Image (cartoon, rainbow, N blue to C red; front, side, top):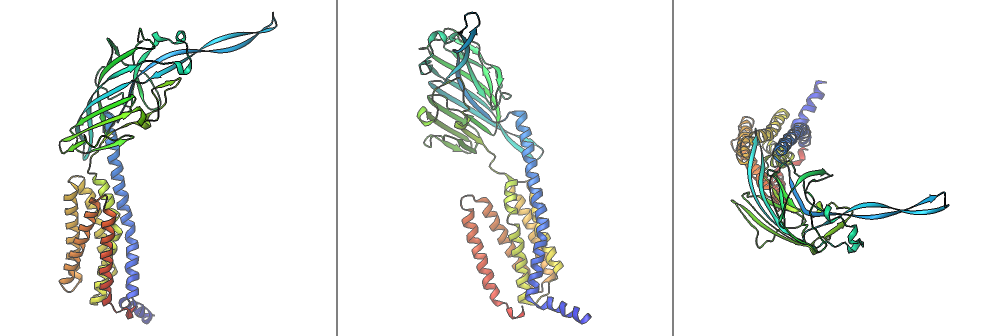
Length: 446
């Protein structure tokens, strides 16, 4: 029995295949703590999202402005036949049915000054803003001919003007609209599925050929995003901000010739014509949801340490696998005996890199956290390998290999457009090095 155990033990010590099986098994085992670390990174990222959402809700959420729009009621008639028992005939009756017509402005010019600030709660940060928005333009004519509505059935004296916004809570001033010589206060009227509505009192002396100029100012708190819907036949938007990292989004992009982005802020101008959209200037009976045509700016925090840590952890299996492979090649070539427990300790040290990285990055910038975590882990493994490997050249090889590998991963996660290209080239070079290094192995021992 002891002879059989001795033969098995010698086989594990002398067989290359056995060593590869053991290292492969250890690598599979290390996937368990590595998975726990990835879950921890996701959990911390979700926590960051929750805290930022809470900050934003108290300050003011994303802002989309829609309007101004003039609403004019009108009526049609529903014919009904009622049977008269005395005359034994049907008598026609007519019932009034009330509808609304919605007219968009001829011109809409928006000037938005966006002043940002960063709010912190503990280790988390969110960018919020206060925006002074000036809107002006004109309405030109109110034509009901498409619906063949006679003038006497149009309730001109019941016309109102209204605005819609996704963030009623963030408004910081009493909003009044100057409509020609008249001034109307806009008050919350009702809520629909996606926007809150501010509506005025009745507009008097409105006629089919009326031309009305308008102007209004809104001061509003918001977070992350500011957008507008191009309701004007010609919509001009000028946005200026002190934020250095805008992301222009939505259905329309700003003019590249006038767009300026510097470390001190940005300026952007949009021009949207009726022909650029897929809707007209008037709607009858129902105002559709036009939020799909919104455009504007995201005010993003460019460095998200949790995203970078998560991207780094995706290369965890690669780093652990390559490091254990280097130790295995050294063991095979130099005939040095490395115990499976020592492989396991080296693998766990590599897993610890990610917990160090995420914990330090919550209090320092990502570069400093990466340097500290990488230096600690590389130093630990290099010193530990000195105790199990005979020659100083092997620990130096381990330290140099890990340093190059971590530097390579850091470069990849900083790239966006060229990450796949650089990563593919790097992996090709690593594979070539391993292939030629393995030529020195006597595979007859397998």
